[in-house]
Image (tube, rainbow, N blue to C red; front, top):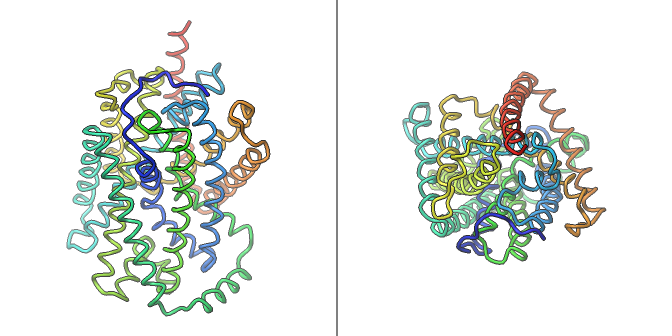
Length: 440
């Protein structure tokens, strides 16, 4: 084990808070968007694809856990790669830039989804100015909470995460119980869809669901503020992934039991609210809206918390502007403000679907790089060669499949995403050259 060089701080976060941070990062707006895409492609096999996606996420998490326990560094993804390949300034800088801007894109999406649900039942539902203003406002709220108190953030995250899980679970079980489809019919429909769908299509959907599991790595960003990292890092990450799989499967089954597939495809992220409204009236719709608002709120909070610490570490190493490394009572205030401002710019500009695709591809490839890094030092991290190779294989297949899907269905967006990568790589190269000269 390598001890982190960063200053030790108050150990305020226990297992419950760490699970909440991971679930906060995972159970955001992703499941509502993925549900419509998955059902349109494989229908009633959606729960199967979600489980496979969760297995892929678990394989990715294995290397994060092993590297996290070995390096004990809140820089997480960036620091792991930099320390495993210490001679390459450019690769460290590129990883840092890509992962941070991936987080910024998801932060913008969560905030935008939050505002969409908040005003969905009002006369302002189609007012883009109000929607974007609310999105920026909620980012500001959670930025202030993160600056104010780590412990306060942890307790608020607990409340939001566990309340949203309860709300979404209750709504899903009500849909299952009062839906027009029974279990026998559902299984029969699964068999029919299995005959229509190819294994290739199911695996593509499973790879796309990886998006809904990104966020578990935020636990490692809290290593300086957590109690008993040796036990709590693996417990928090694996517990959060299992809980995420369960809630996603329950939501998917609830939707498929109660809502006709054409309506799920048509209503997309609002399908669950529409289905609950048909059964429970306005109470059902409002419950789903509450669950979605809590889901996106906790995702915003968890993402601001973890990614700002990673940004601060990268800035300390010279690959971002130095002022982003400043701490106030252990809190990376400047990095938190910068994350909020950049996400707000994305919200103002628009095109969040494009930014989300960028973030999704980025996190999948970065997870693959973490598995490769873990394989390189597997003796030091005490990692299983078989599991690590299985993770590399699974993540490679997932990356190929998601790229195939994007090029086939959204090739124009892929060209823009490639351009974004080039711009970020240029910024990373400039700072890597500065750091290289500074160390000569």
